[in-house]
Image: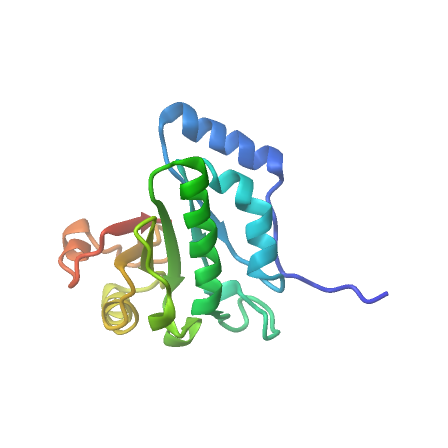
Length: 190
């Protein structure tokens, strides 16, 4: 019997429910971040679909760890295509319609051009707000260059910027992040 290595760690339903319970009690929003490894986006979205029906649960896709072409996460950067992002957009629009809930947010992490192929083909829909999130770490100048090259020059709908507490030295202050053009509408601290 051949064992397929998927290079992923799924959190158990009990833990997801516990965290979503905290969020619901406190009126927080939650992003389920999908790193598909050697699996498929369809398989991972199918597992998370029931959670995404809730109005406060949104979705993030991390192409860095999408290894459909083989390889080991962390040893090479993975990739997603617009067609896969459109699968997620379709799931979220269906949830918005069927559950009669507000629009969803779909964050797509990116720090290289090759992480996301065919980005102009991503379907935009008023029921899903697509955020291209600059996800790399490092000193401010490198992060700003990556933002300009892979987010600002290749926008989809909205822009985002991620800051890493432990890996960004020095940490960019809020004023510098908000001074980027275009100004990110989504800022994530990790």
